[in-house]
Length: 386
Image (cartoon, rainbow, N blue to C red; front, side, top):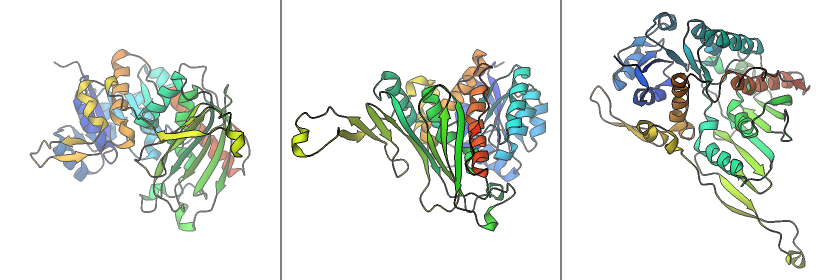
């Protein structure tokens, strides 16, 4: 009998991408699929050869076969699904954000501590190849002192399911802010944010948020860096972009204007002693391209192919398909960290307290925007282990 983990993937829109990765992980025994759509269950189940299929989340939680759930349902379900799973004794991986309410964050922390199981927020940005390259440079001292950071997530949500209408952009901040917090190893002390523009009446939705875009400045606890983050979901005419630029005293990395191009690397040059004679001032920078790092050596061999475009051979005998490795090749790294944390009995790298810090910053930023830029102090969670 296998001693591997049995993991249920909950929500097969975004969640489909994780199914073959869990199947390939050496410490996973069985995968289940959970979705309210029977058509989607049939299609994904047949494609990957998964027999365990559920339309009821509650049935999965009641079934002791399943050790863990990976929640990829819409954001409004994240907190309640997480709480139900933790209270049922399941390990939980959850797509971002952890919650959209500070009280829910507190409740999740309490439930996780009482459960004895692991919780991980599956933040893609800090496992992406671009971030890994920047972090390696920063730890090696190549960037120098980190002095400026700009995070951005602009994505037009027109035509998305109705539950996205009026979604407060800052409540989805973790993709744009978490790289700064991971690099500095700290959390946000307080935030000042503003809403810019105004949603049309038919775009506001149930949340009551009126801002298509929110911009914030985040003061960190114990670090001089002040990240600037722009979040926009409506009424900004540009292609999708989700990334960050990190500027240091020796070198800087700037996110490309067009997604999936290579970030630019700027390296500060020595001051030319003869430069003043030419009438020019200041130190120049050399411009090149960042050498990204897929981190394949960090993964079990069976997962390494998922960091780049990969082939799927359908279990039902259909023609082979090619799938993109989205979010900077982060998905296999996320899966491996979650599974490894359970097997080792340790908190995952983005564990409950870190998840709370990263999520609460955005909730407080939206509160600041609603109140016209009033400074909002962010709750501190570090009395607990990260």
